[in-house]
Image (tube, rainbow, N blue to C red):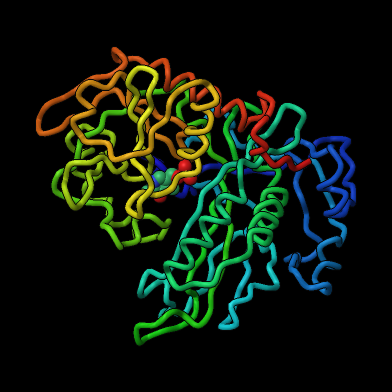
Length: 410
Ligand SMILES: *Cc1c(COP(=O)(O)O)cnc(C)c1O
């Protein structure tokens, strides 16, 4: 959900399933499925029961290796025009935890509505977190996840701030793998986009007096998404926001809580009405230092130096941000994480944003106090382009992953 990614349910989009002629269904186990490199593009997974348990306990492990049937039923999505709306897929993952704080009995269920008590903590007091990552299809048909354990760790940090128990890194990563594999036929072909993975953690138990919920639900759903910028990178136009703030010191701006996005909608709406793509926030104390855009981190390029606001509680520690810093350093740039005064925008060479959805989004102009500064001669800055290419090549498996960031599902 970064920079302008607004999911809508495309209920009118025809989603048909067909069986390829001559294709015989084959029965496989999860273990062999994850181990052998023969995941067919577009093949559908039919779980043996309406749900399939995958949990920690030994009892559940047995169910994990239950055979399932893989057929070559493909989706008839128009892969060239998938955009960024929500496409309903086959399965979602659900795992619950009661007051003991231990998540168990996770299972894949048919994708669909979830039932919640009207008094659920998440509905009444916003006790909830979200995550976002992408799965890419490689040329050989296998699927790549990008640093899923980073999302798991960020959810654990956020859960601590929101007084929630969280799945372990292993539970989180396993659940992501299972959900992606079970929805294999929705992972777009190479080059056509990716499968967006959305993990949620919420207080699903009933509360009335102000307190942490007595029960929690971890849920993962997925949706195929197109490449954010179809015709190459498209520069965005930002306006510096000097009235509203996204985060305050001591607040929850540094964790991926669900409430952070509701609170930025208004400023974003006003900016869009004025023709801007999004809003660039300043710090709430001095109204002087750059923070971030509604849903992505920001970088300022000057010569060989790339500066980005440091992580200090009011900025969301983006995984793309962290990865871009490492990629830029490996390419010889000097990267500084520090307080970046808004004036530095005036003589920057380039500005770009980072987030899972956009990866790297070049900034074409920034307007501050009525003054507009343009970058990249209405095109895409060289550094933005170079870093975008480097990171997406890694994510899509086009370049060798020396960083050890990708997780391959076969
Ligand atoms: C998710 C998010 C980002 C980007 O984080 P990534 O891990 O790079 O996707 C940036 N800012 C905010 C406010 C976010 O919620």
